[in-house]
Length: 457
Image (cartoon, rainbow, N blue to C red; front, top):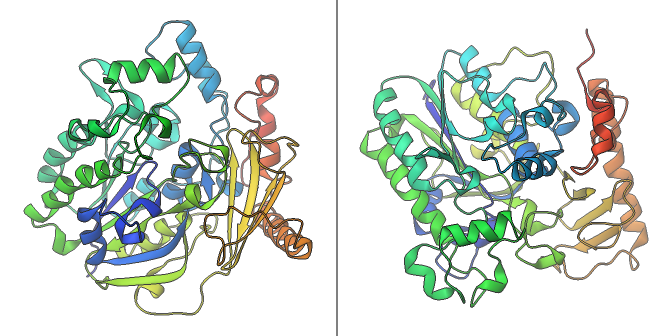
């Protein structure tokens, strides 16, 4: 079908391994499972950069941080602390936000690319208050977090999203549109729905949980549950059920491509991490599937897919050829969706610059992780890690000392890729080197050091 509508749904902090369709032993996600069965699912899809802000930037631009310049939540923690000290409900200290590393000026957001292709564009999201570029390219941007005069940030519920989305879909049903929806509900703090409170050792209301999060600095975590958040992912199924059903009710399912993914996963205590730091599979392996006209049902693709491949793929299905002065970092997955088995990629390269600076390279067999500049990692893991994923999918046995040759080969492969990407875009240094960690206040003295613009041609 030519020029279908496109709906991109990103569920925050939803790791692939907790969905039944990705092999979880409990039936945690029946609605999402059924939706995935009616489309083409990518078994091995990955976030190339974490956490939320750089990940969403990568997804919504089809570019990696070496091109788009966004690899960190830098200054986010400082801004949060400033707001708390002022007893303020503001989401982000505006002065600090203005000094955060900016997106490369020439890089286009997905909404802008679809607008140029003749689409009407809509978003139900709240990231614009974190970084202004998330507000670019929308004919209508619905800020989803505000209710009863309170900005609830990542505590926004699926009901809040759907409250805004249902009337919007009814209003635009006869347009050719691109719609982006951002669901937060799997993100901490973990407040189970009432019917699941039985699994929590100490029942807390939302206010008590927010006190723990904002004042004591802790989330409701695995230690608060009788067993490790086995039920929190049921929330995701409940989150998406009514939204997907509403598309069908409006008759949009026959002319709309729906893409579902997550920005990253969650560690839940593995590798010394409760949240989403570290580049292990629990954090970077994400769900991804496409459903709609021209997309085979019941298909599972085994090859690698990445966040940066999503925008090229939906532009391809929509028949939009972007006029931009750079190459997108990803490639269209449409040939693989349609059955082509060659031409894929042999490795995925990931990065984080949140609580620590690490890079990784993942092949079919091996995962290599290394620190960048930082000698001591925030998660207290070794400076370098090597895992055989075929034999050790949970990455429990670090083989760095047993296979130094493999580690060296992968490290060289990774840095050759970094150097090639830097040369492609005229970048003098890796973005991981130029971008400070969030608590590096000295970076404020010279914010130009982490600015980047594509050289004029």
